[in-house]
Image (spheres, rainbow, N blue to C red):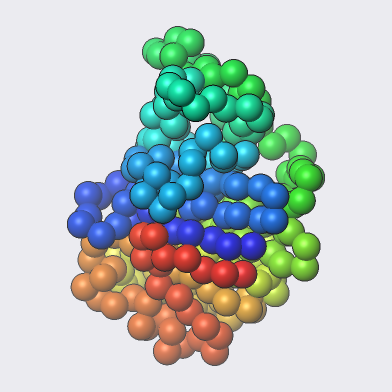
Length: 249
Ligand SMILES: [Zn+2]
Ligand SMILES: [Zn+2]
């Protein structure tokens, strides 16, 4: 598998970090994990045709994770001389269908391309052609999910946005790559629903993934060098997410 980071930031505009979006490529599938504003444009920038995306999985419904869904669908419907030939599967947690129905009320058929299959992950897991996905609830907003994707011998876990969580630790146990948020720059900025560097370190040390990618940085995280703090307290490889960085798994 190969992961490309499309957005390592939050809702706050930043010169180098866009809102959340990750491209995961398995042998036969192209998967987006979240689709924050700018994701569709970034795909074009790295030379991936957005019409080739097979699945989008949403961790939760905050705008910095869903903001490009409407532009993505609009571009898919009106793709000019290219046409989408294969199904486009879009998935979210409980309430996702209602969320999409509200968007449809606003935008009508402009955002309903052919071959669209949109649903909620109902029983926590789904199996597809060359990967399996398992979800678990994490504490952030209502029905926020973390995902584990396994393809062949390899597995990645994406935390989405989360507070410290046993369910994330269990999901991430011994995975090949854990993509984990660290929105808060230090312990004094702790707020419910996001992780501080110490909570990320605790999660890593308990889950023991083989490698970690730290992401979803508010601007002050860069000033406070949160990744260096995490790296010096973990005995595995810790990668700092950067927009357009590729991570082989
Ligand atoms: Zn977020
Ligand atoms: Zn959020």
